Image 1 (cartoon, rainbow over the protein chains, first blue to last red):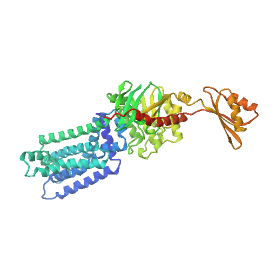
Image 2 (image 1 turned 90 degrees about the vertical axis):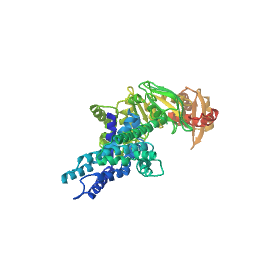
Image 3 (image 1 turned 30 degrees about the horizontal axis):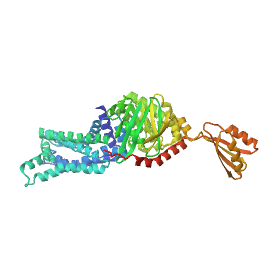
Image 4 (image 1 turned 135 degrees about the vertical axis):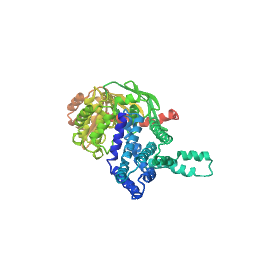
Length: 239
Length: 326
């Protein structure tokens, strides 16, 4: 566990050694504020729901940009060799990478918390949906990061890792959304597609609902992709 | 300490390591020598558990590199070829990171890092970003990282590549000092490095061991024992005739160079012919301007043996049909 945190900490701090980390943080802060202030004013609802509903779309491009370097960079620079010949298990490597990316993602969400405080200061918001919305964002972000780490361990090319991640996420969001509305499909298939649709799942979180089904769905998705990433990394020892 | 038995590694259709067997006892420094592409790095990577062997077995301190990888990795310090490092980290920070991966407590880490920075000449660059270091300094960071947890086995893949002669000297001395408590296997294609530091040399070419032994043994097995080169004022034909009569002389090659006769005398195995040669030259009243004993260097041996390997490699491949890799 200690080693997992060591790897996670390195991952997180290294994002701040280059200007990219600060750039993403700054742009995201600006973007979130813009989304927020569009629906902020007298007579408007004191909630973050609109912001959350936009954010969930933003994650599709944002999280792969953070996760794409995690393993790919180690593969291309060769640093994977000293890492994999140190006494750390493949699970520790993957978990460390994922936790590091998640740490950065949670830092990214701090502007949202500040905006919630702005709401608190100017009116009387309902904190329930704000917290469930944030929880949902963390869970969905966690799933996207897990997909990202998995895609990153396929290739040493960060661009390919990015594209693969976006592709998988689009299958889970856009494709299921449009195919789920396709009336020529049998109802069972459409129901299944709607079940998989991550954005539909997120709607409940932004409304203020914590559905056990959704939590289980997202957590098992995270587990699945992290497991696949570990297996991919492990397979490199067998080639 | 390191035991390798019938190790074979296929990369797709190419055989990188071909039936390698050797044993390295505790405390020995072994130089792993061979031309580029001989299979040195592949063998070392198998020993560290980074690559699996296609067949065969390798154990380090009794732990199998394939089935007991974590225990093997605790015992070894590995410096990969071209020393990949995180360019964005600072030297000290990187060493602490590595130390944590080996479960070293903070006080021990501080102590070892201070000691190693001092020994590897990194004190001045401790707080510098690794990406801004020179190649030689990066190599030293890699070496310090490999030594950090004081491993009983050190595996160094071309540790002095990219260093200046001065730095090479320091590293060579440092490695020599480590012998005894550490078992070291270091690969290189630079001979003098091995001649001076290694207790034993294993020369591989085309994935096979072509020679092994102490540097002295190898030097001795180089064709003959060396030769005597001399330059005298005389006719080459006369020199040739006279010197052939000297007892112990096997062969003489004499030719005229700028009015002098340059002769190369090959003695019979195990004979030192310098004294009888000098007496003969004196008796003939020839003016001598040079008389020197030339010992064969490992370099010559290396060139000889790897060249030979390259020539004999082709028919060897034809002889045994290559099995299809799985």
